Amino acid sequence: MRGIITAVACVLVGTASFAQQDPQFTQYMFDRLSVNPAVAGTTGDICASVLLRQQWSGFTGAPKTGLVNVHGPISKINSGVGLSVYFDKLGQENTTAARVHYAYHFRVGSQSILSLGVYAGLTGRTLGKDWVAVDPVATDEAIPANGKSASGFDLGAGIYYKSPKIWLGVSSTQLPETDLSAVSIVNTRHYYVQGGYDWAIKGDKKYTLQPSILVKSDGTSTQVDLNALFLYDEKFWLGVGFRTEDAIAPMIGYQYKFPSGNSMARIGYSYDVTTSELKNYSSGSHEVMVSYCFKIVKPRPIEIYHHPRFL
Image 1 (cartoon, rainbow, N blue to C red):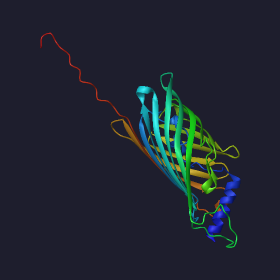
Image 2 (cartoon, helix red, strand yellow):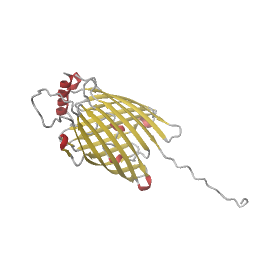
Image 3 (tube, rainbow, N blue to C red):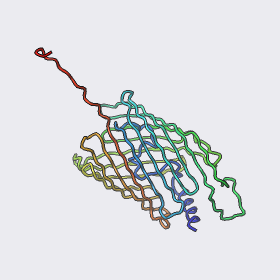
Image 4 (cartoon, rainbow, N blue to C red):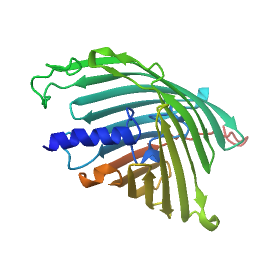
């Protein structure tokens, strides 16, 4: 029975909101890279992050998503490189994707960067074999009897602007719209606009408000995420997010700058309170984010000065 409810709920969500194929995260402000390759290397640090999401808790076969991002700058050629790997499991469908990012940076003034980026990768999709037909007599060629899998080329591009207070990006993923005919799935092109602002309240960095927005569309339907984080003393944050036709999400987190000043670790948690038709069946969605960034600092060269009194 729960399997039938899950299927019906998925249909309701699919008709009411965003037809998602790329991974979806509530803490998107900590994952700008996977959907926009131009972000690679723009922090000036080498950064690694992991996001794990359990969506629609309480359903059998509910979505489970994981993402790993790694990126860093190549200062000598004004560039950045990165790697994103994610997996997504929804019922009988499993998706795995890997994207290699490259970005070229243009300096705008002394503290801002305008970046252009592209990524290339592979997307693989697998359909399981444990289907339960409501009508055992009926057959559907799109449902595999023994499980099927297929993979295809993926390509994306983006532009990104970053200053000490503002960040803004526009990008598109899955540009080729690869047809994975073996599993009857077409990778749909996605479009993203995202941005945010750091507002030091009364000019004091001890109290910082960080509003942000993410607009995502597949050309047919559009979904908007609005978010606001309140950062205290550059260590603790509390926040709330709102996703149209889907959820309200409180958030909490902590970041620690190591004494050397060259590295920082973050951990965050969010909980989606469902506002769609699923609220009658799901207890919500859980998400955890962990990241670590560091700078490679070259040792200062030893300088030798000669004095005429000494040889």
